[in-house]
Image (cartoon, rainbow, N blue to C red; front, side):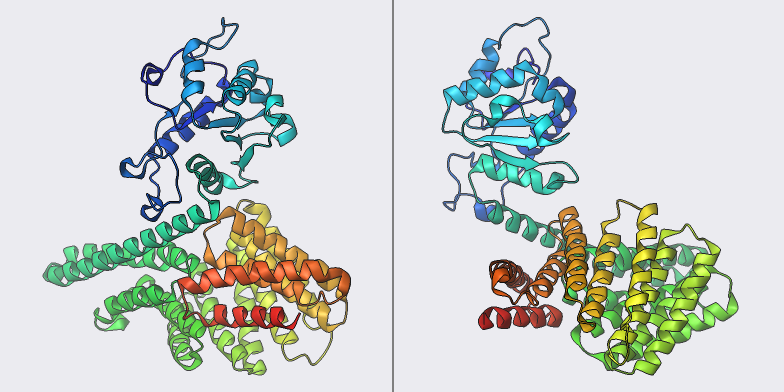
Length: 526
């Protein structure tokens, strides 16, 4: 840092868990990191279990962190307060940026800390610029520092922060990441429980207030708002951690609300459409478990509702979108039952709905993604029967083009990158059937790259972990030559490790179990 004059912490005889060295230009990030570290509580299972050494056991906190507060522009050397703080610090955190590299104060602090404590850890946190233009020269001398890349294109703030905590606490990063993932699942479960309780309360209030029409309408709007949250944000979180069991309970609670409303014909269009979306969600969960008949019953009921709503208001984009989803899901079940004629017919109807949406708003990334998915589905019903070339390749190429166009309007959306990765996976399969191994591997590498970017944007997302493991398996599956053996073995072992972790979270997930078995069989064959 371009040095601060004093800190009240330096007047104490207490030791500091870490000293944060930074340029004054990076003061805002230094303050944020300081606050986060001092407020961070180590997971209970990592407190006092032998994995930590020398940490502050007070409620799992790491301990005091030293950070200067004011500049010393007239100083020629480190202040005595800073020297004392460095002497008392167990670790040094260096915020690396072009300004930090140019700062003589940062350089002096690194040199003094290294001379005082040659065996204590120095943690480099890259916040701006590339390493060559951001790392101060003394940092690169002697033992290589532990590095965390806090930039979005690097580890990101979440994983980078955990690397710093792991370095300070002296614990394996994997142990901390796993505990952090467990915390996240517990938070989602807690939110789920609260949401369910709140929904029941809303339902109760709605029934109680039915004698007053205005009050009843207000309470119903509140309840439906909660249902909307459960269908969107909460469902996304639950899918991210792979909890199909909790999603089922959420869907059932939401459906109970609508079943208690009486005559469906008297419900407003928005409520009927939301009910159809619940049926889509419940059917999707049935499909994931392999119960196609239950899934089809729910999708068929949703199709009947959305078809009626669309007939009432055929130019309404919400109604077009809702019915297009019904067409897709009915087609999806037909595809899984190998009924290619029905699947293709439904997917063509889905394509027509997507085309109408793009005609209404050609710059809407959601509508552009619908076009991408519709091409993808049409390609799937061409490739899966494997009856004629080019095995859906042209449809998959169109899907990628539409999705990349959507990404131009929403460049920070890593879920779009995930879907582009899925499209590349299908494109790879079409190349495989045409015996074009080179194009196959190129497409698979593009798939892996897109899905790794998705995972890097959300390191604790279990769906992303599964997607990366599956992509690694697909690449390894065709690396049969001797020169590719090392790469193949490495990819399979990485994928096996990931699947083992995922199955500990949800052993009932059929898709995860199937992929884990394929990977195990491939390893056993080598």
